[in-house]
Length: 278
Image 1 (cartoon, helix red, strand yellow):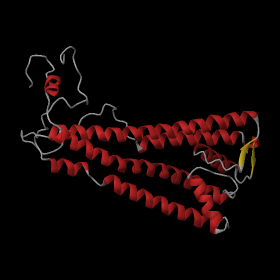
Image 2 (cartoon, rainbow, N blue to C red):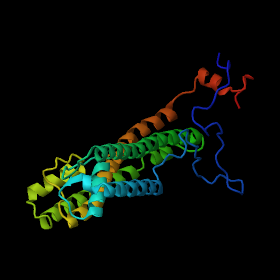
Image 3 (tube, rainbow, N blue to C red):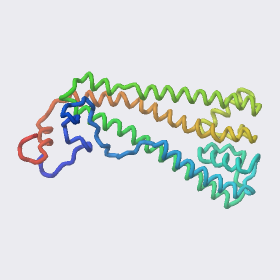
Image 4 (tube, rainbow, N blue to C red):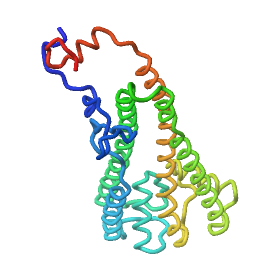
């Protein structure tokens, strides 16, 4: 039976079909927003900045203290420590600086796993963000089915914001790759092919290590450029995924708008089991 046990709404906040009202008691035309079942999991720039600052601060200090146990092409001790921390966090790992003692190797292992965990946390929040968008869209469609025509709802579902963000991020990545290539050519004196090869292996975190930033100026540039370009590429993949989910969202809205009511739906709507829906 449909009323054997109490049921919770499929989506939190979706049990009240009444639209939001203005203080004057009139419908302001706004779309009711449901509280997500995932909570507020949007990637926050402030949170990311705090986590990143703590990670880089601890990493730079730790690798500076063990600078004598790190071998390779060295420039400035503090800059090298920060540079080593960044290439470890982003898993680029050129190999131009490497730990050379048991304790330093264990420390590097700790920081590479910590960096991967930090990136994983951000990606996890981003994935929840995509799921939450679909959830809110479904709630909007359910709430506005009787108030607004299908055209208006589909218009909101087919927003081009994700596409624009994707194109903008792709443009930024392109500019970063050009900037990195020019820098390596002009400052590091690499040939164009070698510079572009180094840029691609860095942005994708491949980091073969045969080409890297080996001067103080190069590493100072790399500290910022590596973080921005690798994180930017990950963000681009997120927006590409968001663009692809828009087609699924449109299909979801169409299903809500065209689905016929069944007796099973009426039984499920009778939450208090009194034989009436309302």
